[in-house]
Image 1: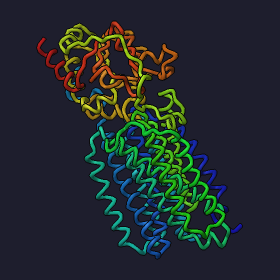
Image 2: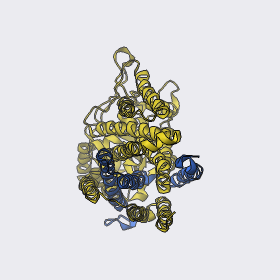
Image 3: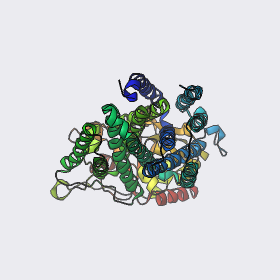
Image 4: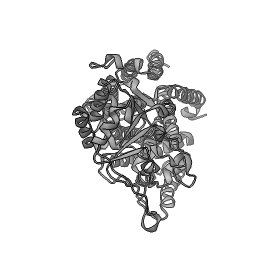
Length: 105
Length: 464
């Protein structure tokens, strides 16, 4: 067995399968009211690919590879910043009736 | 494994816990903000852990990239109007998938020697799959963004044989991937794979109409997540696998909900070209006529109503009418009239779009009723006001077997005592089908821009 990726495959597959099914169950229970902020949130979460870009950045001194990784870092970080900020901004707008200033009740 | 590397795995585990709790807390509005903060905390832990374990020598590049990301990301998040959130979402899928595709390419060049030396077919296979998915999601999302932003027309770009041409591009990308797997030293094919994957994503979404975007965005979301998870396999990074598959399954669940709400399959949405302009005799001349009413007529009806339901659609977003809708709702409520909002799952241009627009206009979320909850209430409703929605209210979906809409779940607005339908013209909806609702005796058509009509309606009500 020469490939590290192959050696790690069984455990990683288990993690992948479990978290996919966990994801399906979690998302099914998200209120339909919140599907838009949910999308911006999961997008921010998957921008953990920032971490992958960091790892590649740390491994190399080759200019071309560095360039690819640096662009990856910038793109992923853009998503982290804008993803969490816009989710917060959207969620702040959701108010129940009793908190409305000019409630008719 | 060094102590530091072991510690990092525990810290990644904490980070994963925060991500999972985050999605759990997103299940209801009350805890949703905690959910967002939880995910942000998890992200911060993941990043700091990585910086701790992996020595970054090119700190200047890292800082520059982070600064650029902050400069681009912050104004997008803080300034984008709520009507444009679908575009922002498409753009973030484009950024995310491009990042993953580029990092995948970088990893190939970095590991090329060991891949060739070890005959590591698995690594190169996963990398190829991940890059194809990442690059096609990048152009697909960019086109979705351009259509939503109005940079290019929203209607599908249709030509004979387009499905074969699209799939041929995908086939070439996959074919060269197989070649690269068998001959990993042949780096020159990597740009070819990228080019054809990019072209496939472009052609695929060009042929999809604007109103199908809620499903398309969800599918692209799923692709972006899956490609991130694939990268996690190559780097043996557990947190990337977990976060990527959570994102991937989220997109998938949303896509299924959206396609069910349109009673259409993924294949039909991706390749059906629905929404194309029909030419010539295929459009059947409509002989029935529709009588138009004025806002004053509607004000008279509303004066005697006890309950009113608004049914908003994408047209409300286009004419920015959500604030006027809320203003009218306030007038109605001040007269003791009960007000609700009926939200169809595919109203708007992304999942949940209408809820966000109405929340922005200060509509309390407990007045927002999803389709299954509002439909039983329509028979007891005095007046339904349809603002910028069309196909999702067409009763033909229930009754006419020959209609393309047949079988699609709709808002049963026709069961209310009176339906007020605000519309620019009598033209058909996105599906190209005439709305049977226009010709029902209990329907009052009011022609004009939604915002203008509603403003006149408020004036008429106040002068009563």
